[in-house]
Amino acid sequence: MGILIEQLPTLGIGASLSLSSKPDPVALVNTPGGPSFVEYAGLVDVDAVIDEVKRVRAAGVPVLFHPSYINFCGSFANSTVWLEETARHIETVGSSWFAQDCAYCFWQEGAGYSTQVGYFIPPFFNQASLDRAIERVREVQAIVPVPVAIEPPPVTFVAGTMALFTFFGELAKATDCAILLDMGHLVSYEMASGKKVRDALDELPCDRVVEIHIAGGRLEKGNNESNRGPIYIDAHECMILEETWQMFDAMLPELPNVKAVCYECEGVNEDIVLTTLKKIRRIVKNKSASQSLISILKDAA
Amino acid sequence: MSFEEQERALFDLLFDRSLRENFCQDSTSALAAYKLNGSELNDFREIRSDAIELDASMRTYLILTHICRQFPITFSLVSSLQNGKNMLKELINLQTMRCHPTERATVFATQLRQQMPTCKFDSDKEQTMITAILEAELGMAWTSAALKRQVLEGESSTETVGQQCADWLDKPVKLAAYVSAAVIPQSYQKLKTSLCPCEDTNLWAHLSKTPLPASIRRKTLADEDPKLFITRAYISKMSRCDPTVNHQTAELAEGFAPLFQHLNSSSSIGHILEQLKQTGASQQILEGVQTGFQQLLTSAMLEFA
Image (cartoon, rainbow over all chains, first blue to last red):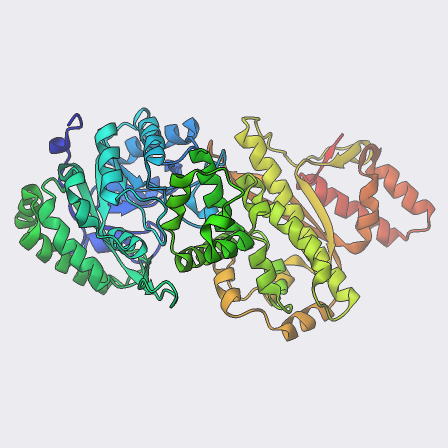
């Protein structure tokens, strides 16, 4: 492995928050049992967020930048200007790595945030799509100054027959990048495809997984004709579903190099955030295969 | 047979309702028009029909949330019309979504304007008023898109500064760049206060659950006090990627509207006032017109030719 995952800092158990709305990241950081890092989904322009980021960093915790405007898949190349601004953003805020969902955020030449197409459009899971994704990741790596981590996106539907972990395993190996796994997104894939992600666990280079996300979601009933159960909707303001906790329990022992576990909790009540962070810490201590993560929790206790 | 064709088919499935409905019935025949081989077609068979329907519906909701910010009063008014909400949803179609994101809002609203005559209004006058409001908001969207495009194409956006000098009455004038003007039934801010029950960012979420009651539409539009609504788009936050555009606004009496055709780079305000005087305008009107034009000059909506 070319990227030096061992050298990435271990950030512990953090929270993904909106920098300018409730719950206030700084208030949470300053509360006992609060997050040990803050992740945020900001605008590309660092000037728009730098004051808020400085407040968070002054409270004593690092930040991770996790946007939603990079095409890590598909035929439509990223704009060099957007990538340069991303690099400037990352350098300015000191994000240790750069992770984002591997999905379409824009179509054709219209570089921009995923909101312009509603939200992420998932990639095809096939060889041609994998080839394009390799191009896209390399394009980002060429400009961004820190290791890149790719994240399987949330899906309501799946197009293509390649297993999720085969696709992301091949992509990570071909581009020598890291991986972020969102537990809810894995559940969403299982519900949309009817396949178990762990059936292809051998295809996933588990040592490349540096970050885990866990977040709320809700289930929409499928129609009667499909007879394939509910559809998972990524919804950070909701409670974490039992299926997601089960995925967390099952994946943690497989991932030896996890540096950060992030509870994505934008819009969640502060008390619930603190209670959930406590639960996450307990599970990590009991289940994680990442010694550095467990050590940092013991040191903090 | 290519991956690009698969991408095209997927995008169409998300934003073309009739294609999606056909796909849910029979995926193979629905995609027959696309040049896909057996394996490429097979990839689409993995898609749950209920899931793609749900996905498309959530996507439409989120895109409308976005577009609604540029057309708050129009969205409120249309939501109060019979089948209004559905009409808005159906305009998140391929025509809207295939164009460049900068143009999407204007393409959407242009389609809405074409659809307006199919709506059921209380009267022709009501239709005229609602269409005028749509035109005003569309004007802002156009100037916003044009300015954004200019900045993104690397052309510097020269910030217009309000102009004033001793002989300002004698200099030929013209409308500044990125200015739009429309006559609306009453003050834009008053309309917004009466018709939009929450902030622009949350408005579609609100309207999609609770459309504006038709009674409020009727009551508000009955209180007629027409204004010439003039706006100028300007960059409020510069960015190489995503500049933010805001609008400066001014409102003048409706009677100003015909005078705007004289703002053609050859007439001066003094000349326009002289012509008005010759047609018998009172001193009070002349003073009002002079003050109005002076206001537009100092706020950079007019400039010397």
